[in-house]
Image (tube, rainbow, N blue to C red; front, side):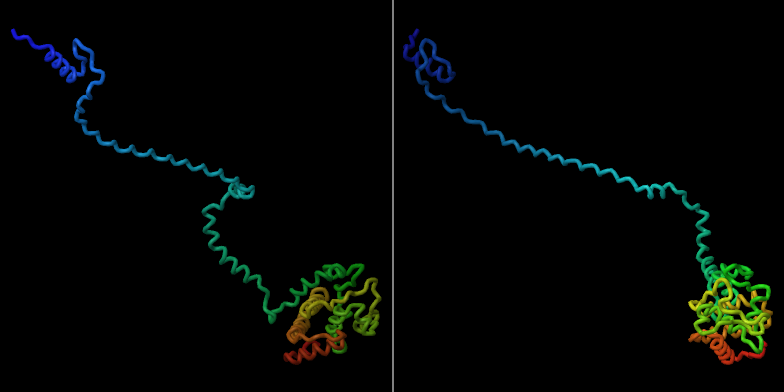
Length: 276
């Protein structure tokens, strides 16, 4: 048997130790082992894709503030009962009805002036002194029972209509300013009346429009005075002619008003003799 030299055995052990990384048997490992041959490095794994960013949470919107309570009058309107549906059809015809209603309320044109109707409204200011029925009071003379026509009757010798208009227009104070102390028909039983013979003087109504003045005088003569129908129609015709001409009174004396009445009557073709 061939004996293997020791140095060959030692070299075999060292070589095995280098390959296996274990110290060789029977001897100490070298102080500085030769670096092992670098093994071929495995390819690095591909870099992982970055994880997607987490979505930013959207804050929830604040809830809207509660609505303000309705005012009391709105709440009352909500509680109020509504018009029933059947009434809607009635409302459709209301404008038509309103047109007819307003049309009936329109005053008559001036050429259809009804003196007695207008005079009744104006006389409401006279009733406090002369009474609603013309029976008179402590502050106003009696007009009914024939008293008015005894003072302001129309005769060929006396223009009672003009004197009546003047007395209402001027009153006690205005008549006295003309220097006149008596008024009325001279043929009246007991004679003409003194201007300030009554306890309370007659108020003047020069502030009235001409239409209101002739209306209230006509109303007194027909309603309280009892003027007969024929004379009443004639006097109304004359008064309407005066209103149509709309003259201005300078003094309001009986003579001035009588002249204006005559002028208007003749200008409108009224027969003055018809009223006598």
